[in-house]
Each structure stands twice: as C-alpha cells, then as structure tokens.
Image (cartoon, rainbow, N blue to C red; front, side, top):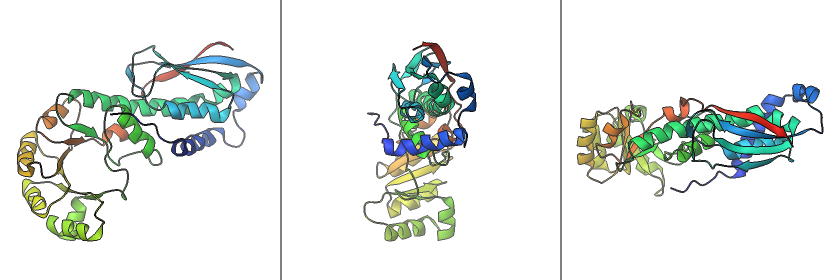
Length: 285
C-alpha cells in the first residue's frame, strides 16, 4: 500500500497549535538568553531504539514555522524501519530556532513513530494471512488525522475517520433501537446509498439476524477464535468480517487464522508507547 502524505493544510494547524502552547507570550527565553542570534548549527534526529518512523512532515514543519531558514535533509522516510543509533534526518539552520522547535518536533515524531511501531508489530505477526489491522476512533482529540496516518505508516489500515463517513451500529444503538434488525432497517432508511453500514454483534445469533437483513460489514466483538471461524462460515463472503477485542501481537495470529478480513485494535493509537528519538548537536554550521 502506497503511503500518501497528509496535506500540509491538515498538518500545519496542529503543529502551529503545539508551538504556540510551548512558546506562550514570551517565546523561548532560554535560547534567546544563552545562544547568540547569528549562531548556526547542524543537528541530527537520531533513533534511540528500534522502530518504524512516522511524522517527519510534522517534525519538519515545526522547525520551518519557528525559522524558515532551517533546512531538513531526510535520510529515511515515513514507514522505514530504524535501529538504535540510526540517523533519521539532519537539520541545518539558526541555532535558536533549532532549539526552540526541538521538543515540539520530537513530540510529534516520537508519538507517531510509536504508533507506527506497534502497528507494524501486529501487521508483521499476521503477514501470512489475508487479515489486515485497522485502527479505531480511540484517538487523541485533535490528532486523529496524524495518528491514523501513523497506523498506515506501520502497515495498518484505517477504519472510519469519524461519525460522518460510515454507519457503525454499536451495542447501545441496538439496545435503544430494540434489536439488531430494527437498527439495521432504520439505518438503511436514514442514510444515502453511498454510505456503508456495519453492525456490531456479540453473539452468533445476532450475526445471523444481521445477515438476514443484509449489511456491508459485521464487527464481531470479543469472540473467541473458534467463534470467529464459525462467524466467517455464517457470513460466507456476503459481508466484510471484522474481529475486535483482546488483540495483542501474541494473540493476533489466532484471530487472523479464523479467516476474518479485518482486526480492529484501539490501543495502537490510544496506548502506544512513544518511540525514543532524540536530537543531537553535531557542529556549528
């Protein structure tokens, strides 16, 4: 799958907001006091541990927005695997600007690379099957576009982006609507023909009910691998099958071997550890 970068129009407001949060009303008073205004440096962004890189556009924008005179040279691209000590990029420019942007740039790069890294771990574990890893809406408020991009950089795929781009009938929708069939019928009557409809089911009985009504996808929630295999047989190719719940790198293969099309994992965005990435001063420029 080709990794398409996010438009600058999407990324720049997020980076600007992060910089404003850090600079406040007075700016970087430490760098302004300690570093001569005309001093220039060459620095390197270096991986401290193995992982998968994501977020270089946001990182580069942080330096550029602080001082347009900075120039980043990328030695690796988003989606690349790195080892401890690998140089990801080098940057030249005014020293004050490099130091001012450093933490914001590394925050984006470390967080997004962490998401890409854990996603790659699960994607690699199920590589021999037809299943794909997809993320969820369990994202950091304001950072969804970046975090879902990081999932793609790690070899995963994206579930719906928000409430507006697909119908996903969850357990509470079913409970309030009065059952799976009623919820599906109301969804079909309420949305246009271009909108996909997925329904979450907890039991095989609910699944059979959903298949009688006809849907585009079924979310098989918290089912065992044996239940998933039976569910795949019931669906028989009439809808996309998605497994969810208790997925880890060690359990993913058992879920994937059941024959499901997708495995959704929320923790890859909401609980991925940051990849340790640092900025090292190399020389005066």
